[in-house]
Image 1 (cartoon, rainbow, N blue to C red):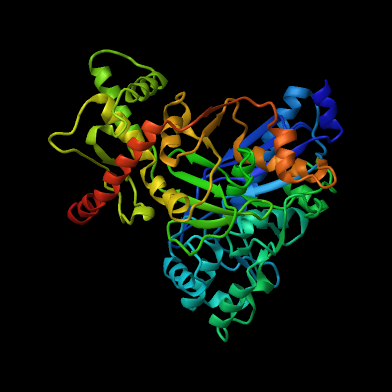
Image 2 (cartoon, one colour):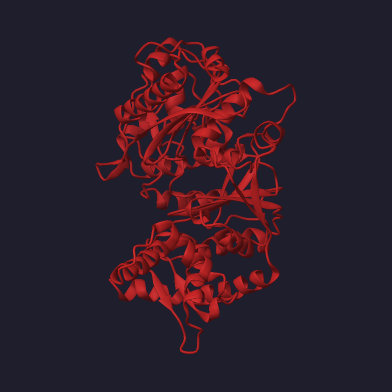
Length: 529
């Protein structure tokens, strides 16, 4: 009854996140506890040789996820949803969405998945002395300029997917700072686009475009700042049934990196999070800027504008899953039906009996290319010397270490070469489902305690709902960091594993072997066409 009343009175917050394969809507109460959710499955399309989602895909997918969330509210609490306290929109970062002066989309949405702007990214990296990956919005823009694409002369506004949806709902051309930092470099001091780099870009393209870059980019806002209200038209777009009322405040739209940081309480300096699934990435909140640009490290920001070093690797659990499935097939041949969770637990726990350096074994989990280690194509490999200690425990430990191999190479740049300090990391994702094992190996890889929350939230959509709640519930002068510590995560149970010194030493030995052996996998790419 209390939840039903709070929903009816709008004492809630709604987060909607557009992921690569799913759009999720999560409604939370005033304590940030999820009370209802809905989701919509979608897939990118290959349009004109680019990966894209149509504007219709975006709107109908959002409407479906919202409708399912509203139906969940009705079923659980008997309430027809007519209002919420605040709304937040999040989406996969980067990409290219450009519009003309009449707000018409000029070319199909180019998602982050497209690698077509690699050349432009490299040229801008040289110009700025700041790493610009191919998936960043400014790289896509410069590539279109270099390619002489006819639509460029008509660009009046450029934004991201999250920025576009927020604009649809509010009419406001604004963006959260974390999302903005994946469009164009942001100055962590001014909390705005880097002025020097804006001037460099404008000089670079002078005479080729009729605009200055700063005039077509969205306005940057920080977490907790007013980002507009749901318009009458926006309410009808989000909820065609007509039940939802206009006037609901929206917080600044953010990227999935920012919502992941919020969902893991990792926005404080010297903290970070690692997401380990099909791919793996680490995000560490920095105390100061790095001394130079590194191709292995992307620089983005938290939702309040603090600089974050991000290492993203394409490969993590896919090769490992393949080996676990192979052992499952063998068990089935013997007539033994082992549940998948038990198969994983048994093999993962067996790895703990292995040598801390994996007994000299070596593997590469490169099902696809890996830019961090300069491997152009996927060639998963397992290799050993004749005198390596080859047993099941070392075999499994080796493959679990390998899941973090490329990530460690990238993180070591920050932790060792740049002297970045790290007090704790929060781990999330499928690799941590088996208690303790992956968590302890990650702690050994980065030399810092790793925490895994016992009660996972609803992921990025939940993190976005928390940001929406922060907009309307923050006390005067209350920082997002304090809000998360005191109002969201206080009292939540988690398990923390500190790095074991012997395991740290063993992982270092494995990593040395891993780096030394990289020519093996590069040769496999060359030889196995």
